[in-house]
Length: 148
Image (cartoon, rainbow, N blue to C red):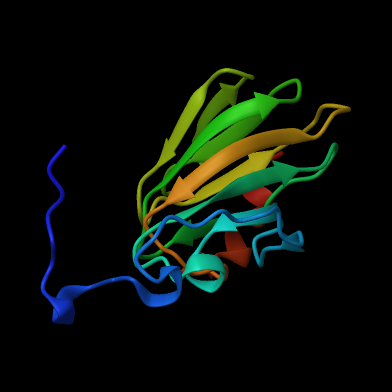
């Protein structure tokens, strides 16, 4: 295997000191939009420059607030739970149902609300190309009652 050696000025070693980093599970937090996150890889944990990877969940009977991610794409894989409703579109007019084993992609600037009407938490592995724990979320409170 060939390794590309970057010039010192382009070195991204930061807190990793030029080696792989193992991150133990961190403390959970509730994001501004209402999802619960367990961070793994982020700018805060390893000095990541363009990636966040962690576990996201929505408790039973809960939902997120209407929001967009202004500067990043998000991808999820549903690990467990019954199902999750994903409402999206400019008027939240599109409804999709996510089940364990499904992947979910949310482009930047797409309005959405996730609703867990089930009795189990909806748990996802998630990644986004925004490395900070407090991502580029913009809330749209005037759209919250569009989703039943």
